Amino acid sequence: MEVHKLANSNVSVIKPKRTNPSNDNRRIDYVKKIHKRRLTAIGIAFALVICVLGFQIFNAHQAYSKTVGNIEVSQKKLDKQRATKSDLKVEKAQLNNKSYLEKYIREKYMYSKPGEQVYNLPDATNTFQK
Image (cartoon, rainbow, N blue to C red; front, side):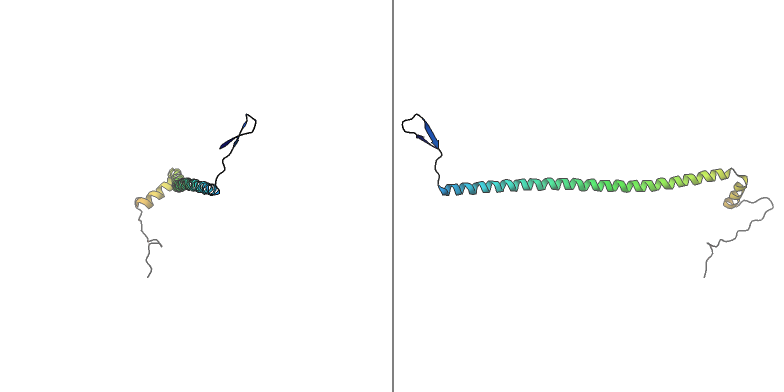
């Protein structure tokens, strides 16, 4: 900066120093280079953040899918156990019926009444066809 004194006055005027046009071009190139570096650094930081967040989302989705699969398997097991429970309740109620109980013991344990002859006939499902 240059200081110029006005004629017949105590006032000084400050004027910017005149620079070379080649100096201005160098400065502009330098500023452009700095802006390009900053933009590159911001871009790299942004890409890293996107990669980290994408990885987190991917892991969360995999954990969610695994949990949903486990829930489905557990639900099937629960339904099967409920069906077994209802079947056992029905069987328990039927075992209180005397005629059903006799029939069940005869079929399962091959018991017979005194003087009764039991013949074991093959089932249609157990026969071999040639």
